[in-house]
Length: 80
Image: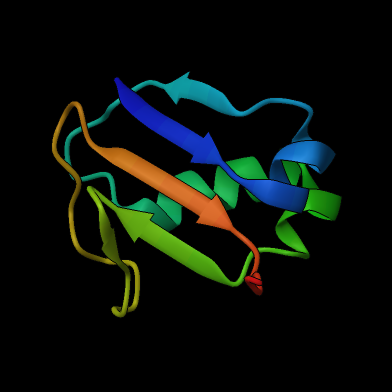
């Protein structure tokens, strides 16, 4: 399974903070995003930051995931 976490306004629009999705060999984070984006388009309109296993994603989404991976989707935020 792959653990998917949502933060901030993204979580508010999904209505959940965490879900699990089935793992498939050769699956990439972009594959997970594509499925979830079709289910929650209004939430993914806000996503600007993605992290896999605690590291911000800076690739084209084709890096394969391992079973047990964690993906985080969040919008930009400002602190204060």
